[in-house]
Every structure is written in C-alpha cells, then in structure tokens.
Image (spheres, rainbow, N blue to C red):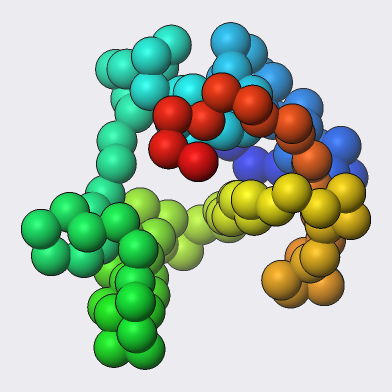
Length: 111
C-alpha cells in the first residue's frame, strides 16, 4: 500500500492518478479498465443494494467495517464515499473530512 503524507486533497489526487490513470474516481467506471482488481462487496442479503431501515443500515456498517478492517489493518487508508446530488452546492456529510472532488456524471447506468 502506498502511503501519502500530508498534502490532503492534492496528495489524494496525485495518488489516484498514479494508481488509476485510466479512470475518474467513480466506482462503476473502474470495473472495465481495472477488471483484474475490481471487486464489489454485497452488504445486504440477496444482493439488495440499499438499506431501508436502521437494522439494515447496521448490517451495512458492520460489513463495511469488517472489510476495511481486514484490508487495511494497522494501515492508513482513504475511504471515498460518493454523494449523488442534483444541487450545485455539495453538502459535506462529515465537515472535517471535506469535499475531495465534484464530478459531473451523466452516464450512470443506475441513477
């Protein structure tokens, strides 16, 4: 795992461009150019995509924490969480984390 020290957003952008030069940071767009390393984890039973209540959100969070813990135990990691919006102002879910990038994606296969 390549570490990035300091630099925040610029360092993350540089790291992304080094690792994934053929793709913007959009999950489903990684699938084709990086098929050999692309993986999708299903967090809910029967490949259900979206949690509908608090118990399902709890299951999703536990799954994410398990995967991240196994992949990055005792390592620094960037976690990128997409926020889809039609607004021009992007609200921050976690203000201390900040907004890394805003991308206009018009070809989402599952909007």
